[in-house]
Length: 540
Ligand code: FS2
Ligand code: SF4
Image (cartoon, rainbow, N blue to C red):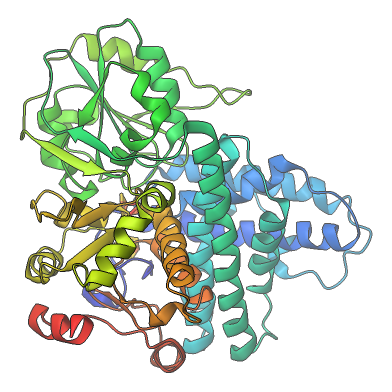
């Protein structure tokens, strides 16, 4: 196996024996093959569109779910991935038959095998199949950006929001990754174009979320526990949460959020559920302890899943793109609805959660909530009460080096405000960093996709202050990354013209020295050093 798609990759180079995340070589091989056949399918759909034919939404969904499944910590179930490969080959074969012109299609578009032939082909089509280090780096950078974009597309799609142009781009870009004639410059241009579509994808999801559930608003979320048995729901899928809340009404079972599901509490629509009890625990990597002490069932709607301990494996359920062998997977019915009764019945037999902490988290500072207090914010900047904003969005992770982010947040001067989104927030959101004239010093916009809100807030401030360039704002970017959704967020920020982003705790292993040089020279991308040095560099 060879995988270097996430920040925790072995030795900051690549996982070759076993994933640090727990991914086995067998699962890695099938994920490589799933990407390969999805590129092949995309070459066919791209040709169909060029011939003026419509590609059905179901085919677009197949591409997005396939990409999503291969994101770090989403799916560890080899059999489930094998099924996806077989299904993708079946759909591709049908579409191939509709093409008028089959000449010059890439090999991946024509490759067809039964399950017995999967392992041999997987060994030929992994990341290292591209020999040139820089071309490989650009191809993977684009692939990872597309995986992140696909995850956001999937969430928008389940809420009934579509943008065929994004699907067409994703598929045409996947097809281009099979084209050996593309130069480094052409792939660099495609990387930046992926960022443009990343902005569109996040805008679509923002519209889907806010039109369906209302605009996030200032909210206090309880961290303690109640006396009823509970279900813990994690990941990013708000539709799954809505269905679970509906189905638990009147059952005597409470629902708690974990990890990236915390920001669901900020949406007005979810406040009507009296059994929506609060947030339990922290970021994804603390699952093993926190799922054990939760006592009740856990529903993982997306990554990040940590392969479970035996003590709670029978309480862990997966759905959507996630999968863990030995855990029950809840599939959507044809109309998109899901039956969570098995989870609810199990919850009724479980003890209430063991309390980890008490208190509250304050959040809900997505674009509309910040715009609502824009006058106050602008006044605080003008008076000098706020000297700088620091965007600290992104991901959390288990490496000790990430303690840097908690220390950095604590070392920031009192006249700075942290803008955050994603699970990175767990490093400092409970530190009681205070407020500036009623404005909390940590403004949480929501999930990682809500980094889009932070970009809108920056653009609004640029407008209010009459600036011509977003980089003239008193904003520093100190972003923590882990998996591929952070890649699309980064490419989106680059597309919006944001420069001098610090990316840590390490730069991606998939950036070759030459590709990293292009990012440094054109966008001023850098990484982190020590808290003291970085405070000097970023805050001055
Ligand atoms: Fe955190 Fe994991 Fe949000 Fe990532 S829970 S690292 O999936 O997308 O951020
Ligand atoms: Fe390694 Fe990350 Fe790939 Fe898992 S996702 S195998 S930890 S690089």
